[in-house]
Length: 503
Image 1: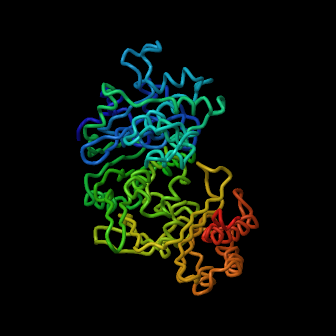
Image 2: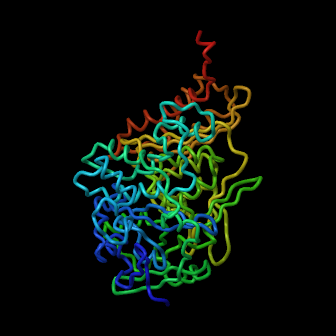
Image 3: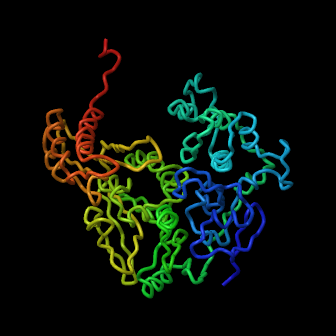
């Protein structure tokens, strides 16, 4: 094996000091890079955010912000990382002229007070600063005319600034001091990177390739297999091994519940799990593609997924989280499952013996259990085509963004000549597993799409999954939200009155 090395702020550091269960954040702080902080250890506050050089096509690099508190440090063997300390000049001086443009705007506009969250904000903001395709609007949001595609996009979303900065890039960063407005002002004041900017130039070269890694100590072992065959070898010898892609779930388990599996298998860079194919009959999405990568590749072609992505945790989490991980954990509150159930998706399960396709509706067998057998992995998710024309995703949570669902409802319907020709409904947070609302579907299918039909079916949906009663929400509240979701869907599928009709 080659030595464990990680390039941080342009310097190659020895990664051999990291154990199989050492988080990237702990390892960085052990190197003296203490700008990134541990705030929540759950990926919810963003105080630990750093930049990682990720592939942007075969020949380019994208600076991507991730939570350093969750992934293992060894997952970055051979990779490039930039922390808040490395964004300025190499002198490390505190003079204003040595600050990165993001740091300068944050300082000039009062975007930092106690400073605990600031390095994470700076890294997340820098990722958006360097985002390919970020284009300034032609006018300020108040003066948008929508004469161009860029202008229309900015006018449609008031949380995109006149400089093209998408404020949702900071949705995973929390601050208790500033009230956020100075941070927003700093984000909207940023220009475009100069041609001489070394981090901007870095985007023109390929990202580092994944390296075969194997490290073990008394606490356990970390392995990055080089192929699916090697992965199956490891699973055959160690059926209790834990698979890790984005570590957005296993990282929390390690930090909060102190779990220490004997073997961790990193599968996030296996090429066989990172494909996306769209054909006439369906779309196949690799299990190890991040949600951000899927969102970018699909570019709105699956409206129900497009509705899910902005409500799935935060951009920091979506930059690491995968569909394979979200479904593999078997969590009843995972937001992807209801949407994929409504899309009638299937999972491609792969093992040394070959592959089999399992409808997602038949995948879950109980709380965090499934039909997946020892030695099997989720290789891909398949979504059949054509898609239903009328779709919606409703997430009921205490916060609008970056929160766990109390109830999640996804609906996909085909309505022909005022009749419900077909409908599929996926529910999350109401039972021990994500469920298809089949009784509700039966109450709708073949009936006229009227308010009376929707209201009658809503009463049926209120009992789907025998709604849970727990600390997130009462069973009574969940029933009410289930019923309201279907009535809301009916209202949203009705023709909107025009100005002339209103007159």
